[in-house]
Image (cartoon, rainbow, N blue to C red; front, side, top):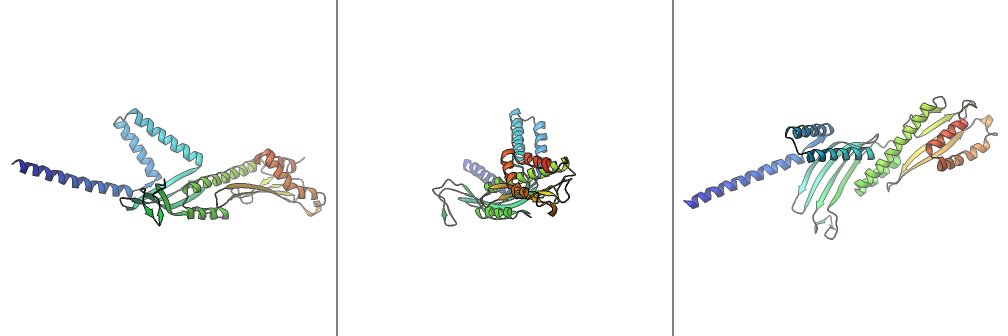
Length: 292
């Protein structure tokens, strides 16, 4: 009799274990195939906050949630990088390694981007693609990185993106992209500022997003100073802003202004070192663009 009862209990336990295993697999499968959009994330956060109020979550959990949201907001404002969509799925999972495919898109200031990559998580002692990780501290590696950006006129940015893809270096990509996009935004704001302040003197032939600004003299027809502001990024991710001055002087004034043509660009570069970008442009506008 006792053996029969024990057998019943054992059968019941075995049945429960199988059910738990099945539910666990379904849950993991659902989690891995979930696609998150920015709107869904916000809805989920509000839903969680509402449930937290209903169930009277401990104050420390609310404080932790507020802290995490504050940190996320700070990082996005600090880097200028905003993620709008994200999804992941598990491609392979064994006892020694896990491969997950990640897809995400977003904006870095005014520059949109999309990317896809695989994240390989490995255990010590595993050899992958003829590379032995047994004596290394690496626990994860990015592979098959693909980045889509509309680089447009930024040919050097396109080369950098290709270099980052080959290396699979996400940190380098985001760090350099943030610096590059920040300089583009700074140039755009500076051009808009001077156009608004001196609308009759300053022109932006390509708009505020262009890479040059023109100062026209109100006294001498045809006299112009073009300030060219390029932003370069090399394959190592180093971002360098370069400004130069290109004077345009009418034929009738060439003799009188010959020295200005020859020395103007170098004087402007010296001003940049002494005064900075904004003050140098301001000084140039006041000295040659305003009526005396």
